[in-house]
Structures are given as structure tokens and as C-alpha cells.
Length: 114
Length: 120
Image (cartoon, rainbow over all chains, first blue to last red):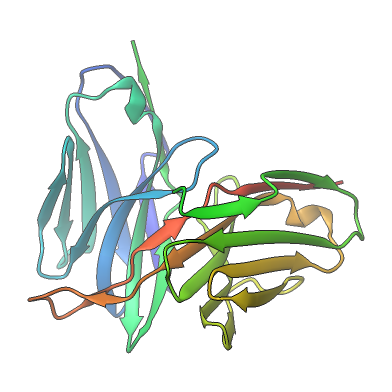
């Protein structure tokens, strides 16, 4: 069964600090891995997407890494801001032909405080 | 994403009532999806449609039905709502593209703002 597990479930950090969120997956056949940010009361918004051959990708203060051998990914947030407070969801895609099956993690809820 | 809209945004209804949630998109995507989100669980796929004539069940389709009225519109119906259908519902669209130099297609999903449904 395809699964995506995220840790920690929740995290509180001070503004300006860095943090790293983890994602472990067992999805086959692996196509790509995305990190989404979901603000409270909003739909998820894509932050990064990585395919099998990519092991790091940045989007501003967000840097995602992927180790396809160990089936692990991380999302590193640098110099956190209050607006980073949100849930971060790891999503792994298995693509067969023209159909993709997405498996969603349960998310890490991040709170950035003063 | 403002290109994907959902109505209503909030709805409270009673057990046994028929409910329709609507989704519209201006992104021009052929693919549309309905998900539900429950506390402590990842988003789960209810139904998806790859074009107007193509409707497919997701992993939790029981108790739901859909209608793809046009490329831009995809509606989700609860024929007889029950309390365990209380959840946050998201519509999404996607494009399916091959990136130059990549051997894998990408299927990025764009989500609507969600509909919070409460069934009493």
C-alpha cells in the first residue's frame, strides 16, 4: 500500500529561526514528490516538485531535498516568518501512462511565533 | 488559487438532505478532482475526471456522485448526507505536461479554496 508519513505532526518555532520537516514514503512506481503549503481555510498551494533525478530544489526560503534511495524528503525553511505558519503537506505521485495517483501525507502544522 | 472557485464555501445541512458542491475553473485544464480532508488524515480522492466524458471513482466514492457539465465545471453531490461526511472538500484541476529534458511527466494540481460541510 502506498503511504506517505510526515514528521513532526506539529512544530512551533520563533520567527527568524530555521526548521526542517520530514517526509518518508513508500510509493511505487515513483514519479515525483511535491511539497504543498496550506494556509488555514485555504487550499494547498504547490511549493516545489522534484522528480527521481533531482535531489534538491529551492523556492525562495524553501529548500526541498529528495533521497530516492532511502525514499525520504525534507523541506527546510530558512529565516522563518510569521507568514510561514501553515500546514505543509508532502505528496508523492505514482504515474502510469497518463494517469497519476497521488498519495498525500497528513501534513506538518508549523506555527511561527514572535 | 483564484482560478479555481468553489461554492458554497460553508454549508450546514441535516442528515438525509441532498447537497451539491460546485467547482469552476478558468485555467483551461481538462483534469478535475474532488477531495475531502479530515483532521489527522491526508487528502483523499473522491472522484476525478480527465475530460467531460471521462469520470472515475477515487478511493472513497461511496455516498458521492459527480457531474462534469463542461470542461470548466465539476460538481460533487451527496445524495443523502450523513454526519461522517462532515469534512473540508476541495476541488482541484491539473495539467499533464512533459518537461523538456525530463523522462517523467508532471501533473501539478491547483486547488480551490475549499468548502466546509457540516452534516448534523
